[in-house]
Image (cartoon, rainbow, N blue to C red):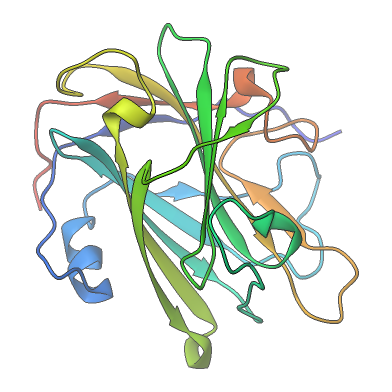
Length: 219
């Protein structure tokens, strides 16, 4: 069995992103943020074909800010509309969030073509329901010549929590994951920031914790 790991604890600091956002600008803006690595906690060793991904976070008064960089040999997804079952159609980056003290949580997906999936769950073991409209914003950059793609997402606080006001001083539980498809391979390679002992991204007790710090990191 894999060695049990502790869920990540992340001090999420305020930051600002210059518009229009670029990969170079995001790398600079998030350079002092805690890197969160995606792994396969349910395995003793990564499976063949596993590719690394790194996620960094920050926050503004209105939203959680997320910047993910993903290595990928074959970057694609056939999804063409909001809330299509994108995880069955190609590569996706996934965001799971739950406000501290609340039963409900959300699951968001972004594809390399910037199609989105937005689901809300009333609680553990409940069925997810689609969210219409814009629960979050995202931008994607695909660099096939480098075998990489990147995602920048802004998740609005009201999409996650019932409590109004700033995120300052609050805590959210989180998990980031991905489906990495390669054409010609039977199944995708899955990975997560959470140390899941079993291959299930909805094991909430293994999610990490984001603390919305009031101090900026030194760059």
